[in-house]
Structures are given as structure tokens and as C-alpha cells.
Length: 398
Ligand SMILES: [Ca+2]
Ligand SMILES: [Ca+2]
Image (cartoon, rainbow, N blue to C red; front, top):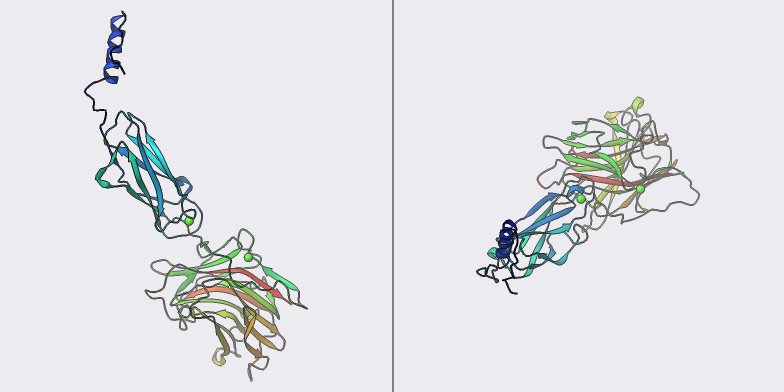
């Protein structure tokens, strides 16, 4: 393009301005082939929040040039997965002539569920009219977890919604937005209770909450102590006899002791074990594929006795993997324990022998995770925290 326009007479000031403009547009000494370096050394680490839902990766040229620069880029998975953790992109961007910066934007998937901190890469796959400084063509992005809710799948065994000759008399499906306090209240404290347990039970939402149709009870390592929750239906929901189904995912690990159980409603006046105890499900976290059903009884604690049985799923599985249904069929003639509708242990109403038979009275529910104790032992370096029990429903048919 010719650089010597015909100059027309004009006022001096305007003439000088025109010369300046002409000189910047047409400097003959400028190298039309200067090749800038692309600098892309920036790793990004941000919390997974709405405010950070788009991660920005700046690209900087060491100098601008008179030509457009084109950069091709794409995202690649590391521990963060396409679609699940971020929205994959593969595109090109233009750094216009005369400018030296641009940015790549990647949307991340924001949810409320706890995950590991996860990483993905943004890779510069090629460019036109520029080189890569130091050969660096990728940035690593870390999506930092800032959530505390547990993600679970709904898979696993689902029990029948009705039984011949029986009526559903009560259930908590945990479908409301919060714990139904017309069904449940809390035991608090408990550090050092009779079984030498370590946890302190709280009513804090970190230790019990309802999410997506499930009740979560969470055992946490608070550094100096453990917290958990123990919920009970005493004075609120009490039943005598019935088919009881509880669908749950259980925690695991050395020293972790989840339980789904019942005590006689006369516990406050008669005391334990005279009130009777029916353990629908107990699990010792170091044997995470075995559950136990037990009854405890005795006129007073010096005459405490118990009997029970267990059942296991294959050793390659655990009760943390998916839902199972823990049941008792409790009638005037005895109690049968079932796992996923398969009976595995029974007692009849002569089980207490010379001791009083307490299992002919109303009982209330208790759902809890204990940490440590004489039976499970204590957490060690192999025990992962937090641990949760997710309960899909508690149903009583009579
Ligand atoms: Ca999350
Ligand atoms: Ca549910």
C-alpha cells in the first residue's frame, strides 16, 4: 500500500497530527514479520463456587505485533472430568493486531457436593504468527472443594412398598427439606459413655441433615475430638410389633460403629437392659461387609445378657457401596432379622429364659454412628473421616 498520500494545504496543527498518524502506520523500518512469544505460565486454583463458575486463563504476548495472532486450545482431563466437573472446550482465539493479551474461559460445574480437589489442563495446541515462550503450552487448573454434602447414588436394594396382610402405619422417607422434629430428637454429648466411645453427639447440621430424600448422620474428626449424631424417636414414634424396614448406606473404617436399633419406651423408668434392646443393624467398620442383629435383656445390668447373629455380603463389597435394607419382623412370638428381605437370624419369645421378656412393649428408634468403643476398637491412621450413614427411609408395617 502506498504510504505517501497527497498532502493538501491545511492549518499547521492539523497538518502535524496527520504526519504523526502517517508515521505510525507506515514506518518502513518495522519488521512486518516480528514473531511474539506467547506466555501461558499461569496455573489457576479456585474454589468451586458460583462466583468462580468461569475460570479465566490469561494469555500474554511479550510484544504486540501488526498481525493478528491465532491460538488454538483445548481442555484435557486430569482428575477433574469433562461434563462432571468442567465444560470441555476446544476452540481458537484471536489476539488482534496491536494488542498483547487475551483470555481463555472454561466453565466449571458448581454443585453442593463434597469432592476431592480436582485438576484439569488447558493446553495450547498451536498458533499462527507467534511462538510459545519456553515451550510452555499448558496451564493446570485446580477446582478446590468447598462443599460438605455427600454425593450418593440411589442404587442398591429397594424393599417392597407393601406386604400382604400388613399396613404401613408410619414411615419417615426424609423427603422434606429438613429433619422432621415431630419424628426425631437428639441424644447429646456421650463422650465416654458405657462403651468407652470417643464421639460427642451434637445436633449440628454438620453431623445430621436431610438432603435429596436421605437423612445423613456424619461422624467427623474435629482434630481434638470426634463429633457425630445420635437421633431417637422416644416420645415421638413408638411401636409394638411390626415389619420394620430401614434402607441405608453405612460408613466403614477402623473404630466406626453405625447402628440402627430400638430401645423399650420404658427406658427412662426401667433403665437398661430391663427395657430391652433390639439392634436391627450394627456394623463394625473394620468388617465393612458384615452386619449383626442382636437383642439385649436382663432384669438389671448385672444380669445383662444378649444373643444375636450376623450375615455378610461378598468380601469384595461393603455396605458403603450402595443401599441395603435392614429389617426385623417382630411379632408376639419372636423376632426375625432380614438383610434385603433374606432372613438370617431369629429368636423366639423364650429367648430370655429366666429373665423378663421385654419385647412385648412399645419401642422407639435410634440411629447413630459411634466412634470408638470396646467392641469396634478405636480409629487409627487407616480410618478416613468424615464418615456418613445415609438413610433413605424407616418404615413400619403392622
Ligand atoms: Ca462440589
Ligand atoms: Ca427417601
